[in-house]
Image (cartoon, rainbow, N blue to C red; front, side, top):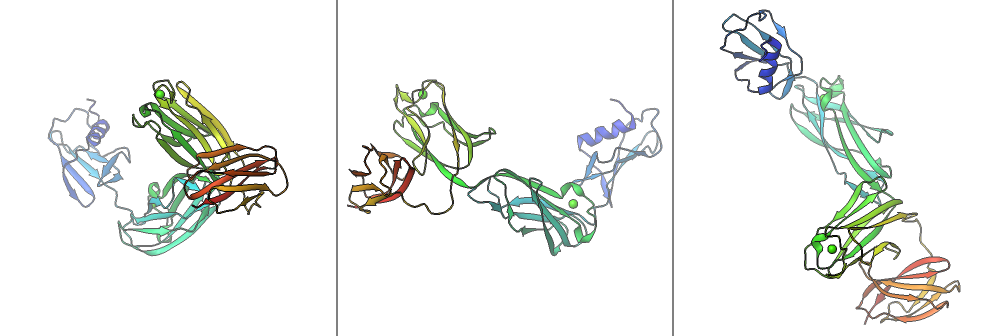
Length: 381
Ligand SMILES: [Ca+2]
Ligand SMILES: [Ca+2]
């Protein structure tokens, strides 16, 4: 051991076993050991901030009182009189779906010895415009309170909200290290829902998947599943915004999810029935679907481009395009996005068809040369 005074004190601090008596803010420790020669007898100031006393950093001083009985004085700084702190941010979901602002709720704490009656709270997202909330109240030493802040606009994609408290009682804050708290979240707006419909084979324990954004952030993942659930369907809804995504499904055994041990498959489909990725399950170690979304959640009502009659119906109905254009396909989906009927149009603007399905609400997707349009259809019996 290097017995220089400074190293001795540092070693003592490192053990964090400072036993002794506290008198005011001074901790005195008596030590019995042989004093190394050359030890300075004068007061030595150690590196500030290396020690802690009662949870607060403090200056450390030492003195050599005599050749056989040195003593160490561990001197804590007096607690600050003015010290406001932010100790949490809540009311922020990790993913905002079709919402373009957040209303943070924070915890404000008085770490100073004075009664805290005012403070200034400033908050910003991604370093953009700053919002101010002058706080008034009454917090005793150590007390906390929750403060609801006015909504602040989020930006599409990744957001970092930073909240800083300052000016306790209108005075300089004496401890700046506890003034700031931050939280990260993702905001998807406008947003659309894309459903993963995953049909498992008998080896669910092989299967894991991830959905990533174009900057490789994982925004959804699943699996492994249980074995023996051949034919079981896992349906997961993702809240996505305009942008590009990568869906990757892995197979631990390297034989996909079809067809040795069942007929697994997956499809990624939005509420309009548009398929953004799919596989018949016949892959090896993995299957990747890359897709991009554009103009999700377009504002304003869409004029139906086809007539669905009758609606409700008992399963038999007629579809007529309003502009006389020919129907390319009719797809009917159930509540979790599974295709129950897919009929290719015969080039006619009128198609009579039927759906054998239980009573309920279904989505009818008609594709013509003008694009894809959607209506709800109710089947009764
Ligand atoms: Ca502070
Ligand atoms: Ca497999």
